[in-house]
Image 1 (spheres, rainbow, N blue to C red):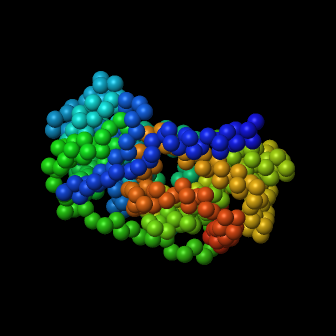
Image 2 (cartoon, rainbow, N blue to C red):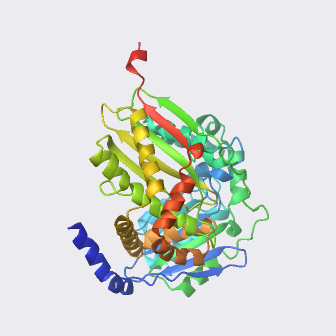
Image 3 (cartoon, rainbow, N blue to C red):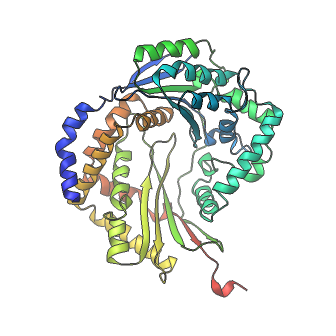
Length: 447
């Protein structure tokens, strides 16, 4: 059945690509420096409206971890013209939905709504770009909200603190080592002045990208952008995003975290990895294919087939890489051993697998299957205006260009077995590894 499904994808892909939106990305730039992007897709009467800010957790001042995410929360508070929560209530009353998210490199706000309401939501988004006014009491109440969010999302399971610690161990100098949500002791110090200073320093049209996808006309979107965002002056506070960079990693790093709540221990491994670079994405494309080959499938990937099915030492395994970032990030793998198999054995089996892969390279037939799956995935992304808007916005705010975005699918298909093997040899260096064990306390140590 799987072979039949792949064949169907291959046979229908050209016709599907014609029926789907052409994927053309149209751009404009306002006089105040705000970049605009329009992706027309008239198959459904809906529009996705996004504003991306070039600021995230890695742009925070020392001692203010999580302030970018906190500001995301505050953007739903009062402005000079709207009351607390009124923004979302208006969107919902007009049949739409809205939300926001923060990462290390960006903060984004979005609404999905009928095209004839685009004027409304764009006006409200422009309003909170310059007129946010949550008040000191509103800031303190929202501080309690994000502290509770940290308890629920991070501290409620052993994996949350573990992931924070291994990430911090992976980045000893770059601010990617700090958690996006923030360290609790620093979050407790948030106040009105700190929040509003961050807002004034980073929220401005010349630090933002407007992305609109859906049943719209590019010229009309630009006219609305001129109407709502055009009058907002550019900010002199916006500066180039210069961050401390990681020194070359010359020693393996290890950590062990024990937590009584752990029921399924696992080993996680991280390696430094380059990001997609403007005009130079070939290395990232090879790493994307490498991740799919090693751990992209719970059944057919190299790790699943070897560690779970053939050797029978693992309950689960995986690998992932995301190169859409401003600075170099990580290539990550994990193995969750079966009961009776300790973490040392699981790690040793993973290391043996990686060594064989570096020595032998990928199976040619499996590589072609993976690339076929990637091609199908790229085609299906065109079928979702929301996914398309997110992918384009995330790439642009990370420093990539429209030309880079358009070239990416073809670069993935051009990856060869030699490219993958070379990428694996470059990445999987023992001295560059960061390894973490998450486990319950040893029984003999528990009194």
